[in-house]
Length: 351
Image (cartoon, rainbow, N blue to C red; front, side, top):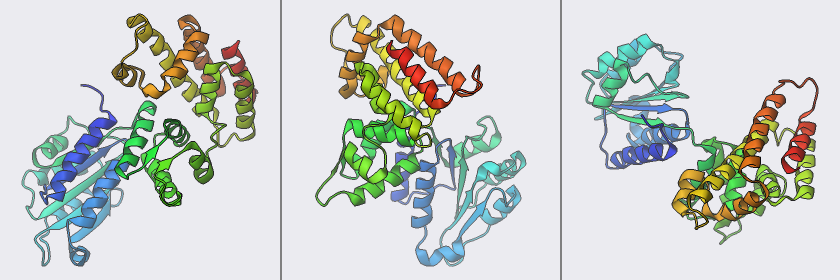
């Protein structure tokens, strides 16, 4: 089975949301997976919209997996609503339920109460799809399974999110933001929401300067700019960035820098392979997005890097990054500080 991607999560979310907006409800909603953002978004919409506010105090119940058993949940689900056509039962942190608890819920799902909408939020992982609970959930309910986005998907996700809000963002700014905040979609949305409020009136485009001013991510000293400096062979700029990282280690952890460099040179190696495949002809945008997992906007950077680092050198750098990743975690390194390690790594890459 193909690995779940963030685009699959978005498609599933959109399908369930469309039905909810048309007031088409199922007896069960199983919201599960690695990334909590879409789980919270869907659960929040249902708890705010299925019942009128006046009915929620009697007919909407929220419990937590660590505090209840499967039998407790079943008892709640089998209650009849008070002066309402429906009741909503929300189980948060359902990943804390035991297998026996899910078995009890599965028995209930064989004949669920028509007036109950049961929402199970199972975060951080997915339920075992081989078990009867999951199979029964498929029969009677809707399932949202979320995927952690790849680093290469984040900048595109940021652009799509802002497009829905009527905003645009510079490609470089989207990359800087994604690299700095990581794959936590909730954190990214929180920062973007604050940023959109702070933009000058009439401005609907976000730049790297906006991010530096309002979020505190330097537009000059970040992993994206370090990759660009290495691609261009700009020794002075690369060393300035290393010095900045050394002075601000909490904001620029070594593990994230090596991860960013590894992703960058892996894309460069892929670019070499695509250039060989197309024998000097222009590489189609579809290949750039699908195979390199980057935007065509950045191809010029990889063209410059390819002139400096041939396929053999690129392969050596990837091996070097693996070595320094291990050293940064203590392997064969008793006392070297991260700043000195990064300085040595950059020197070896560029010479």
